Image (tube, rainbow, N blue to C red; front, side):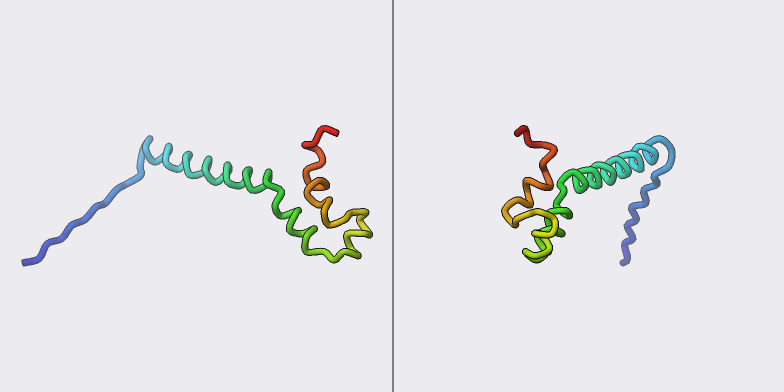
Length: 74
């Protein structure tokens, strides 16, 4: 005896629209969060040598302050 089970869902109509909208919003929010984290800038500066940082006028312990300087009140 053979049994076949099929679960076919179609994203058509209004439910498909909201599903695509939710996917796009999620992707956009993830991109925004990554951009706001500034982690890429920190990693790029940490990868530089001390001499390269000195050319930029930075010391290794000042990297985080340099990247987030616009958020600090001093």
